[in-house]
Image (cartoon, rainbow, N blue to C red; front, side, top):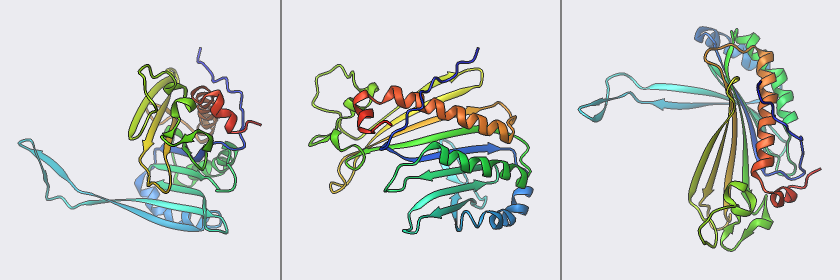
Length: 271
């Protein structure tokens, strides 16, 4: 029997989430991608009017006698095609990144209001099936959902003091540090992985990164929640991808409720 998350689906007026990302990896023939990319760009232009290709140059290196050396092979350029939708003030609200075998949707935080999973899922309901059909995606092997949380003076002011952020009062995994201390200070990078469902299989990963910020910005801690379903071979259809996206959201909600302390969640203003 596969365990299902038991999310209470609590929503908050002021969650510290600054970005939500859905990433889908599929099986796409390279010739299909390159032949149909321009028509894809035209099709989504009304919803994503801003376009910027990001180039990543990769050099070829091999190891000889234990020493890395450059080969004669020409460097490769990997292009990630980035599309975005912005507010009238120029703030990025939603962006999409696409590569030959992958699509990712990024829901960014409007400075004046929080965003919710339903907004990201609505976009996915439209774009994932469209991506399947347009590029002839045969099946998908990976669905991943990421929530990026930022703890700072701007998002959690009641937990910021002269020595930094009271991370032990906010995150349950830091609440029981046994040695005597006055606070947990950056830099630190703590990671943990959990097997959620071995049959699916579904996993969850937590990363807490204590950032060293310029003094004018004050202290900040980045808390990343990552949930993922990966199959041994591409098996998932567009509808399976959407169903797993909803499942992964409930996984993150359950972990959010468990990992943030009661005191922290009260400052997020549950509704």
